[in-house]
Length: 167
Image (cartoon, rainbow, N blue to C red; front, side):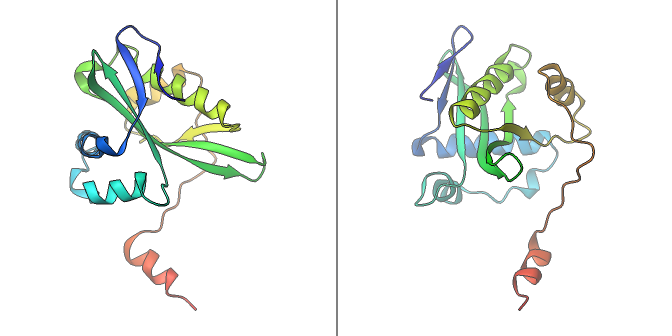
């Protein structure tokens, strides 16, 4: 999808390599909201390579209200063996606080749902922090259901290094 205008004066566009600094600023704002700013290690160079390098691993959309960037989302495609088709995984979505409750997050989710259908995805999914009650209400309001029977597991740092070093 090239771009989408759902709300008056609000346009969603795919990010370009020229937007990397803007993307990093959104990531840091989101991390600050989630009280985890000290965990951000991404840099402009890392994002440039990860998003626009030889093997991009994710995509980004940016929402502009009156030509001002006010929201972003980062997503990538995974694969469901049970469905036999790809899925769209929403890694992050963020709307600047002063622009919330205006329909921008809904517009971004509509954009992503349309993109998922366009790319023949069988599902659109994401994770949400349990304490983020406004986000939980929003997601339930658009028809999403929690996958309570699943628990996310993660390997990072030393644990990841140790497993990767096994013979």
